[in-house]
Image (cartoon, rainbow, N blue to C red; front, top):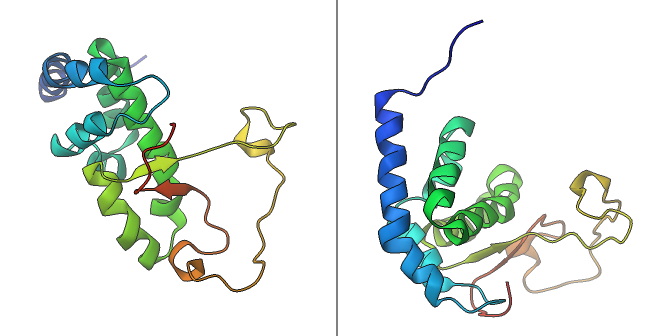
Length: 161
């Protein structure tokens, strides 16, 4: 069996992320309100360049980033993961207009990406969803969001997370 170990640069990056999480992210997380989006925390994740990595990193780097953040600040890891979960469908399957509108804002932490499961029989199993979206007339925002947008992205509301 081949042994696996991280490269020195990966280990150094993990240590740097743990320090950033403890020094810069944990204080912002502590100031957040339960049940509300912590926009200051999201903005700092963007300023540190971590949110853009959601769209450019491979699986190992994403795992290292999440584990390193969670070591010192689980709220930062959760915020990062939810931004990725909510924005990935737009990144992977959105139109160019959708990507141009939302991904820069998700990357800098000014838009909050959201993902919701809403079917009683699906529980937390996204693959078990059976609902299909169909256009229901003309809407001004149809081109911007598309009739089958897989994720809701909100940028201008500071509502519950």
